View 1 (cartoon, rainbow, N blue to C red):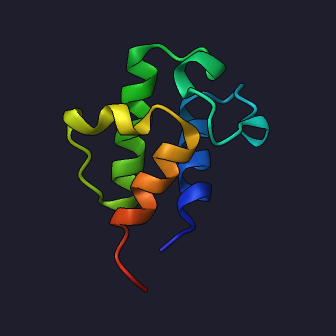
View 2 (view 1 turned 60 degrees about the vertical axis):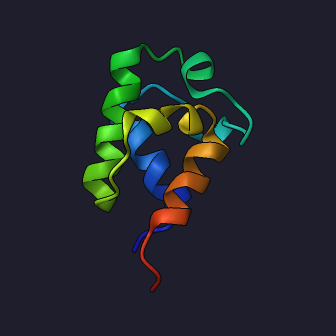
Length: 81
């Protein structure tokens, strides 16, 4: 399976093509830093689900608020190689 950080970056880049994902720090709030509205955020969650097969329930969205949180969430749920 792909690198969790690369997967999240790729999904963000597809939804917000003008976003400078390389400049994001792990503690950056994605919606604030990238000026994402709630639909953009939801579309990123959906893109990550489609890329990984990981189910992400709405109750977990708060865990995805920062880049580091999102990457950690994905990494913890990816099947072992």
